[in-house]
Length: 225
Image 1 (cartoon, helix red, strand yellow):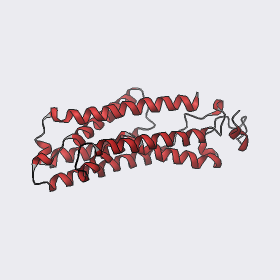
Image 2 (cartoon, rainbow, N blue to C red; image 1 turned 180 degrees about the vertical axis):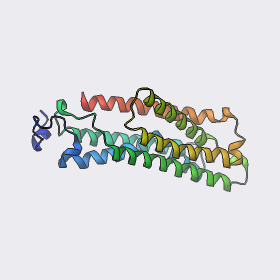
Image 3 (tube, one colour; image 1 turned 135 degrees about the vertical axis):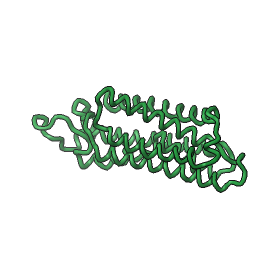
Image 4 (cartoon, rainbow, N blue to C red; image 1 turned 90 degrees about the vertical axis):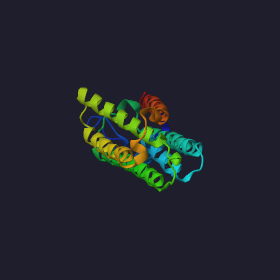
């Protein structure tokens, strides 16, 4: 048994067998820190950082690599902290199906607002450029890819009747779609983009998203067996 399990008073299993870190004062802080870092380690925040850095950087490498390093670091640290929170509880008693609507909606809002702010910053920078060549379709391509992924995810949950997180997903999708629509609808350069110009940005985002999915799946199996 993990020594951490002996340091906390778990609920009587005959009364409450399944336990979540939020039920334990000793584990709650670690879980919330991991939750916050997990928000940073998402494709939405990566795209937001990329869009924001694109407006202040004078090259094409920094906006891609710096957010990637930040997101990967946040994901790695967050996974360790979250694992520590779950280690207070024996695996057979992990309440992995616990629904936390407040945290879920808060995470959706934070991710969508971050992406919205990043894309708005990118659009403000674009509008201030005197020359069209200063415009880059990368952030808009990534934003469009995120919207497509979110639509697929929402439809998938509807088909499988997983309706518990639909409100959070709908909020997230609405805010992100609005930001991307502003990019395509209000910027002259956005309206003139050929679909093929969006492919590089979309491919980068798809790669980040696939890595995020694989990491999330691996981390879940590692935490809960």
